[in-house]
Image (cartoon, rainbow, N blue to C red):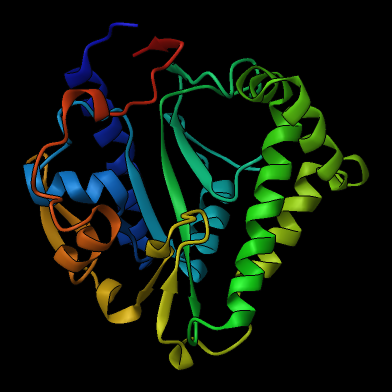
Length: 270
């Protein structure tokens, strides 16, 4: 559907500024991630066709941010996760702008709050990329799929076809035994390392399933600032290496029109 992309970008920045204000007042660390970080470095703002905004926070600050926003709710913005959405199936949270609407095909009719949002991902740490980590990530990816297919059965039935869907439902048996909230709690326990952060050498973003999910800590930290939509926000320390690993050596080149992906919202109200 058609909508004013400039107005959407402006409202996404409003949500970002709210999150950044909370972070700066409380000493929480954050940085722009994924296409938002690429937009900051390549365009000094949004990728022109992009319709979302992603940031990350070290796990400790991520959890403190969630706790703070729940104790100090805003009239304009709302935090959304498994604690306030029964059908929540994600391993990260969103901050939504109240009195707006942005509904994706997968989550159509799923949530009570469907406002325009930004995604906030927890950044975890590991000592090194070992077999134990690979097993943990395999388990995390499995439970992520269980959560998605349980929350959005019609979406997957239409996408996969009846035979694959039935097979997936059989493999997703934990969803019949435990609530989404319990499953997400188990996934979070897998993600969080019990070792001291100072002993860790790598930063992990578990929701990313590619090799780019694991990067040396020095690529992320300490965060530095980069211009984005006329203001300055935190980005990974070695932004060039971060983007190269995420998007390849040609990340500064614009992709062909047919590869310019968006969320393609079903409904939108700004």
